[in-house]
Image 1 (cartoon, helix red, strand yellow):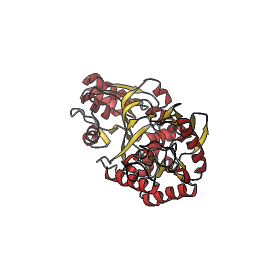
Image 2 (cartoon, one colour):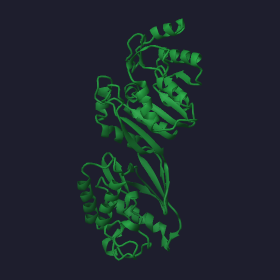
Image 3 (cartoon, helix red, strand yellow):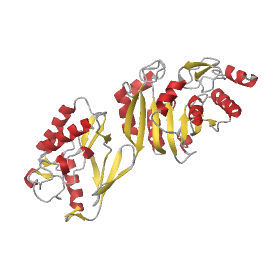
Image 4 (tube, one colour):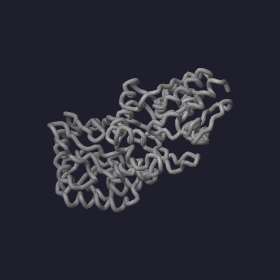
Length: 390
């Protein structure tokens, strides 16, 4: 190891920026180079890299690492065929990373900059993001509101995947996480569901390095627009969506009437947490709250049976038959199951009047025979069973 590298390593830990927990002469984590010896707080970089690499093929993909420290993950991904950029606000760490790059010539790039909205202006889109144990420091330095805005805006710029980890109730930024009620694995999942445009949030476990109180998640399938048979849904912010009905007919039925149905019935159901909140409408559009991600076996709430009963009870009390309950119309947010898409709903006495012949598909009683009845309880329970089996 050359003299300049030794000098730069000794300078680590000189400045204590927000989030810097390095002792003098120590790095936060290691490097994928056996010939560069350095003391590190977090061990097992190879195993940590292995978990992420097993979940995502980074070959020829562009990626960024937010809070990259001396570049362990940046160099690791670069050696596996990615094109990486690392950001950190610790000058000594970035200075060392740039010197290592000058020696190893991996093609990695490093920048010493505060991790704020300004960073997002430096690139249009990337394929993946590594964001490990930095979010809590962003909350401490910027405040929760700005950190959440950053999280959503970042997700809009990701083509494929974001790997995410944050502290919970530890001695680092534990207070900030407690204040935000981020105190459990489920709370981290909800944080990602509510504040990113990713539609698939998977819990990967814990890194095998002794920091077992920090759950790791893979966020993928970013999406802000959905096109259905009757309408286009656009996510307009972290909190709201806009549903735009087509101005035509389906099997002879006006889709304008679907918009009117949805608006009417969501207003009736406004006091229940299990349905979209109606914020306003025009002739062909409805503005509603964002209701989360698809309900899956992995994110099924533990009190599913209780919530199913609440959904059915609310529909009964409002004199509504949904008529199109199926897995695609079940979402989850903040551990609450949401039933969406009320365009074909009606009052009980009209359940067998005016509907496309395929409505409800094989989650309807008697399908594929012509519909003789709709049974929301049958459809909802069958949908839940189907989700748990897949």
